[in-house]
Image 1 (cartoon, rainbow, N blue to C red):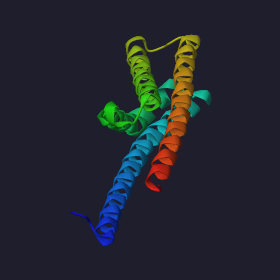
Image 2: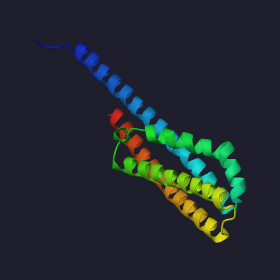
Image 3: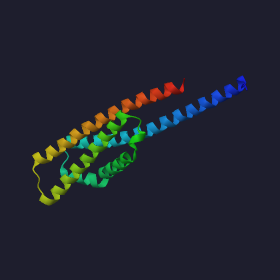
Image 4: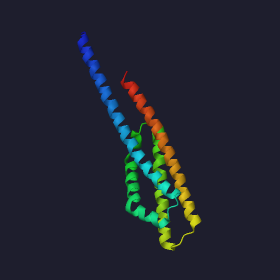
Length: 166
């Protein structure tokens, strides 16, 4: 039995529509994951800028307790909920894990500083600066992770767009 040209055309249009909807869904999910990563990296950069500016530890602790800390926790929770198997490839997984692990380390380093200050009251400025420098270095890796993630994202979107337009 032969199908008419009209039936083939309808079938082809349905397939194209399905492929287009799938591409749109993939783009939307990828954009959402990118937004989570960008938000986290933005807050990481703000913290590093405060440290570069020589923020006093006591003032930093107040900022952490009333603003920055909660942003960090929310960002970390959102990063942790992104399923690695859905990111779309090796470059995404590596970039995501770099951002996540370095931000966890940044937070733990700060919390350790705050706890140590409570215990000993007066900390050696050189030791505090050493910890600040470690956090700043971690942020540099976070920002590189973001750049790598964005690059992989743009490539993915270009590939999805080119496949859906075929």
